[in-house]
Image (cartoon, rainbow, N blue to C red):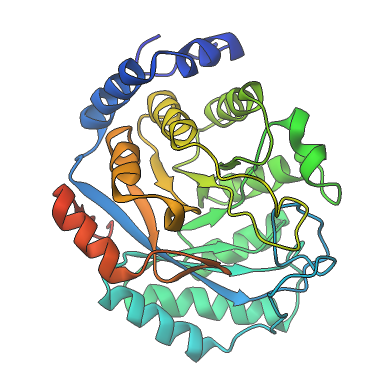
Length: 320
């Protein structure tokens, strides 16, 4: 299989690639990465929870689900100026993309959605790429976000369709795919990936990567998250995922989706600098910065700056 994705990619092709000996796999991924991207540049994004907790869904990994007893306390939707102040601070710290997350099952046409649209317009005026993750969207809501200037929308598949029901029962896999379709039709960049370490099998990871790579258009951004096990959630006692599982998943994603940004997302706080360096070598070229990733801890900005300096990495400039 070449670096360019075949139109008739089979699950068996992805399995063969994923199971390549790890050093050979990383070498192939690094070669693809250097063909399509500047390996010294990493996109720095900041993710702010603009509405926290109280979510009616039952995602087994999420501390924001109302039904679980975690340390997360529900908070209402932030006011626009507070969000824009956070966006200005993120830009000052070197971020080029500002993502806003709301713990909603779905977007409802309401004054709250109007407020989110105002946030998007404000973030764009600051000179940052604007991204949102708000749950399920209708076609019209996606269109309105696009008109407000939204650059990207995050809506992860999380895992394979076969394993999905073990993690979430309040939303179907097809619901997620439908929202991704609405985002794509509106002309918004798609950010879609998954979580490693939830108890899924190797076959589940392979199936997720196959689904992502064979969407009508691959996502422009593919976040690969390591499960952050939060006490009080059904997955709170899961062991930390092996770094080689993360490296293998990132490398396979890079080869299958060579033009996409592959984002090393949740779980970096538990990774050593060496662990993260392997992920960058395997094709990751985007991170979330800041001390929190929605409600879970994330490395501090100073620590990331020191890591970038040691590894010879530089923040990517804003697009456009």
